[in-house]
Image (cartoon, rainbow, N blue to C red; front, side, top):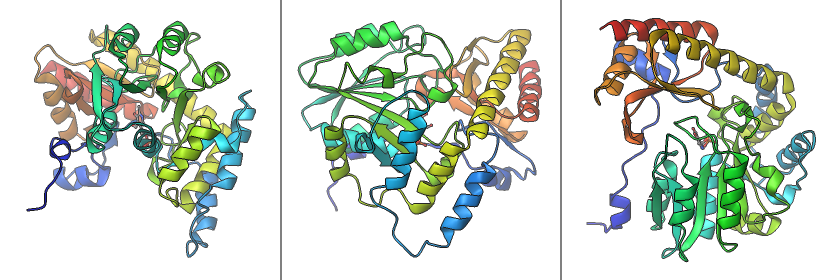
Length: 370
Ligand SMILES: Cc1ncc(COP(=O)(O)O)c(C=O)c1O
């Protein structure tokens, strides 16, 4: 028998939302509404499609391992928002998931500790287990990341402190004050990794954009993705912003051609399509307001969200999240049960287009009537 590390055996595989085609095939459905994976409901920007079509003609070549044009496009994109960075401070990844993976593998050694919220994106736990790294899970407080709990969890072994803002699946956020408090408390030798997958939707005035703190605090890695507001989850593209020194180390660890050529051109085209981004944010905002109003009419508790999804409580029984998920699924609406994140009687609904949101509410209402 091949010997496998105990920490690997302990990994429970990540369960992604099912693809539409699989659900339709399994349940014999014709039209399904997928509101399960926080994807962009607008479809792909035609400008991205055009760029990808052209790039397909050069697929016989390896991609640019340094992603020169993509990094420059990112520098430009951030510059237009008043955020200064250089290409040397960027690390690109096969989704931000991979950037997180590279960061952990580059910087945290066995014997050192990583701190993350118990109710955050599950990959932090998976990567740590795979890398044989100890991790501490800090439970949320009032459905928010517990910043004081994080600070209390810091020990001399702490090497990485992982924050997700806005958080998935709660959609809640920590404020500028919370963030500053944590940055001040974090040891300078530890890295603060900030996962801002949903930053483009975060419109609260006291939401901290961590890029603005780079002058004062150098021990940060800020992770961003093209999977959400930019609408290209399928190509797998994300990036990290850090110091040139840390980026250099991370680049030594990452696989040399980790971001393929289609992803690179798609990313550049997406960054330039400001109209698409604007519309994505507007559609998301309108969708959220619709859901809030409907949930209130239905008397359902929900968590106001800064992301492109909402957690809503669908019953008191711990079985109700799974029951509701199944009921909706059989009627062609795919949402996400949240038992794995400690919300057994809630479901997470990704914001869709107007019609999709209406369909979701209609079926949810039927479910609630019993
Ligand atoms: C909080 C958070 N971080 C990171 C990711 C990973 O995104 P990707 O690997 O598609 O960039 C997700 C995906 O849903 C997420 O919710």
